[in-house]
Length: 128
Image (cartoon, rainbow, N blue to C red; front, side):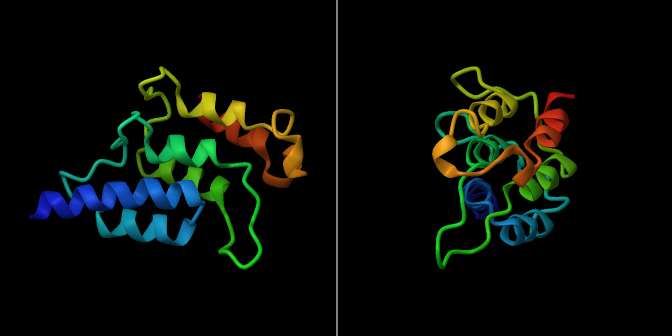
């Protein structure tokens, strides 16, 4: 039963990281702090971890009426809590690769600029 709960939290962590929900990501990580079976690097069926998801979605804009999206803060928190920035998904992509794909140059329709989220600092953090 405990393992099922932890797997549910690993799934929830990936979902909330993709949404950019810093508060919920922090709650999940705190709730599972010290749990041997909880894996911050647990991957989805395609091998994407919470860090992959947060990086892939970092350029999404806040939708009217939705919670504030805080992908950069989520990324920093995940790394601080032991998320592996070198882990590859099943397409051999590291979180950094997904972040690089989602730069403003590739998503000009969002209207976001690199300075809006300090994308270059994130790339620097993940490339170390």
